[in-house]
Image 1 (cartoon, rainbow, N blue to C red):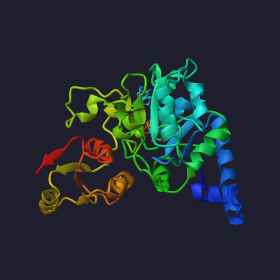
Image 2 (cartoon, rainbow, N blue to C red):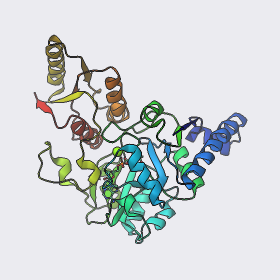
Image 3 (cartoon, rainbow, N blue to C red):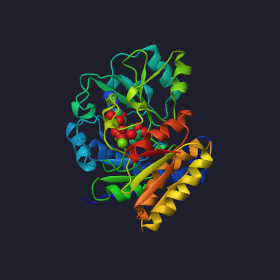
Image 4 (cartoon, rainbow, N blue to C red):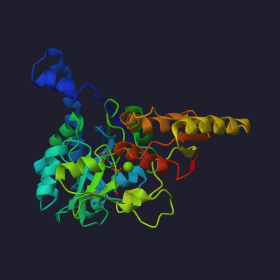
Length: 357
Ligand code: TXA
Ligand code: MG
């Protein structure tokens, strides 16, 4: 398949504002040029094609959520098991009604507080939502992304867009245009190549069909953020607390059960007080290099959780490019909500291979 790659990096919050609010001529041109490309991509969605597009979290690979054939081809392009439900992306909060029947005051509160943004709400699904999208579940994950390219694409397509992260199944999620070009050139109709994704890890998934609501996948919006908005306690899926692959609890978000986010290299996490971790990283690096292994280190600055989230997947991909045999990573403190979200990915990437110092 010939993939058309469109540069839409000109369409940002900034240029959109300059064009719409100030009619600044250069911004108007830039925005109009990007909109032309997005219009074409939207028509591809309407015809049942596949479009890779940027969001504020990671890139997504999207299809018309109501076109079963198109949704099936997303699984095929990703090489993903088809029991794994997809998140459905909408362009305005009121379109939730296309996908789900009942709106509780809690759902409205979270939509008001966090949409557009990196929060997916699992809701009871309407009958018309295809089983291919929900992996046969009676629920549907809904999200309004905070990215002008994503929003314009959905709006112009005139239909919600089902989109998993645009990585080949099992590999790290894509946060830069070169990542999606590497994985999907030749496998989709259009790639909308934007700038790097702002957040860098996937959205928080919260199940609103249970009481209290339960977080199925941690993300930039934390358990505390959600509890604070609701004025209610919010639970964590017990499977998220397991520090080992052998934890008894099966995760409730089906996508969380696969070995995921993984680099090609073997990966090991070192957990403990920072100075000790640093020393151990250096010791293990030297040890492994002495037996001829090519080692990459991954250690984020202290307290810089936003940056860690932003860089995490990109660093894994960069280390794979360097053909390292082993990645040794320093753990982040899980006492911070965002640190916890990054650690959730890091543990999976490392296959729960962890040592404590
Ligand atoms: O940030 C994101 O959410 C990105 C961008 C593209 O929006 N998308 C994304 O999709 O990460 P994906 O398919 O890679 O991950 C979706 C996760 C999976 O763990 C899946 O099992 C869970 O959400 N999920 C989706 N619908 C669900 C449902 N109805 N019930 C439980 N879990 C659901
Ligand atoms: Mg994914």
